[in-house]
Length: 154
Image (tube, rainbow, N blue to C red; front, side, top):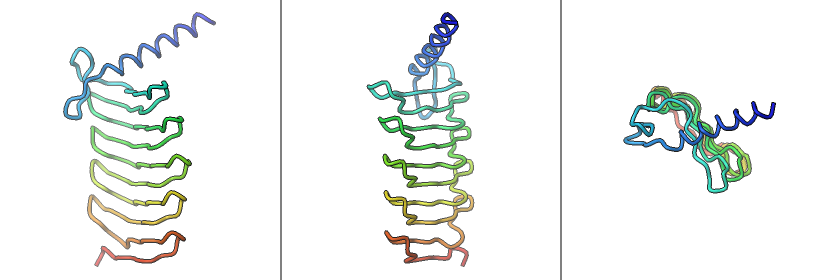
C-alpha cells in the first residue's frame, strides 16, 4: 500500500511539474516541446499553496479556472470555452463573502450580473443578452435600499 501511495504522489508531482513548465504566447499554452498543451495548469505561491488551477485544451483555456488567496480560500471561479469567457464567474473577498457574479456566453456578457460590497450587501443587479444591456438595472445603497433603476428595454 505504501508503494502505491508513493507512486501516486510521484505521478501527481510529475504532472504538476509538467504544468509548471508551460510557455504562454498570446494566450496560447505550449508544453516544453512547443506542442499545444492539454491538461491541468497550476501556479503556486512561494509557500507552496495553490494560487491558480486551470484546465487547458489544445493550448486554450477550456473549462473551470480556480483562483485562491494565499490562505487557500477560494477567490474566483471562472469558466472558459475555447479561450472565450463562458458560464458563470464568481468572486469572493478574503472574508469568504461573495462580491461578484457574472455570466458569459462564448465571450459575451450574457445573463444576470450582480455585485455585492465587502459586507455582502447587493449593490448592483444587471442583465445582459449577448453583450447588450437589457431589462431593468438596479443600484442599491450600503443598507440595501434601492436608490436607482434604469430600464434598458425602452
